[in-house]
Amino acid sequence: MGLRAMKWNEWIELDNQFLKFHADKIRRIEERGPKCSKTTPEAYDGACELLEEFCDYLPQRYPSLYRKTAVGMENLVTRESFNIVERPLAEDPMQMAAKMVQDDLAIMFEKSDGQYYLLAGSILLPGFWRLEDKFGMPLSEIHSSGDVPGFKTKLEKGMTSFFRRVQPNAPVLRSNYFMQVDDGLAWSHSIGSEDSDGIGWYSAVKNKAIEHHWFRSERQSLRRLPRSGGVVFTIRTYFHRVTEIAEEPGVPGRLASAVRSWGDDVAKYKGRERYQDVLLAYLDMKHQEQVENGTVVEGEEREGMYPF
Image (cartoon, rainbow, N blue to C red; front, side, top):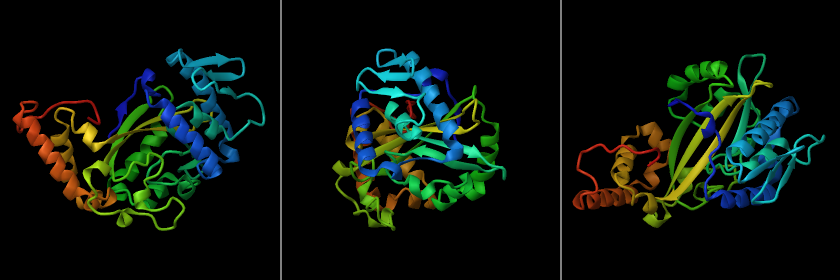
């Protein structure tokens, strides 16, 4: 699963794109509402616990952006005030939590059968999947229904075991990445309408110009909530034009090598056949430019922070 330990001050990452992400989330809430944010009655306490955690964490981690109040928290930039103690809450607790951060959010809860189920979430900027398709499913079905490569053969047993072991004081991080051939942060319209039954890479226009290629990376944290026992996912998306990241030293060569290394199942899952010709030709060209100008040495591994 590619897990690594997370330092506590790394739980929530904010950057200079916060207002753009926030505006996109507010628009999505107005347009799609409960299609993107849901909490079952049995998960309500856990979702409220996440609100409590955010109202404690964010003012300490980002004191210039958030201020703790008697009833919750205020965002000093957007001027939003969050009352997390009134009942009923003014809105779905996961939707309220999603307004506080740039991340999408999901909470899995264990049921009597020993499986973890997606019972609370606010998935506003997913790119390729819909909360309403996965809501209420056990972890195993979420991944198998999405045709995640190697899940049944390599990941299922380890993932289930990990969920039972994860602790509040030992959060972890994992990262993944995708290519996208449109600029939709919230939804990749190249794979079809968000409201259509059949979505998939098969509908994407093949080998669009490189200006339409985007690199989408997700930084996911997993942590058990101490009171409710739910396992909360934060899903922080980083979204950049390929032409932008290809200016970073060593990136074109590493990214081209990574895309070429995908097995057939991963390549199908990530839609490589729809963009590989244009993407790899461009990355190879940029890599050669960096070799020729001395930015990188041919065949030399360069270390860098994920995803660059």
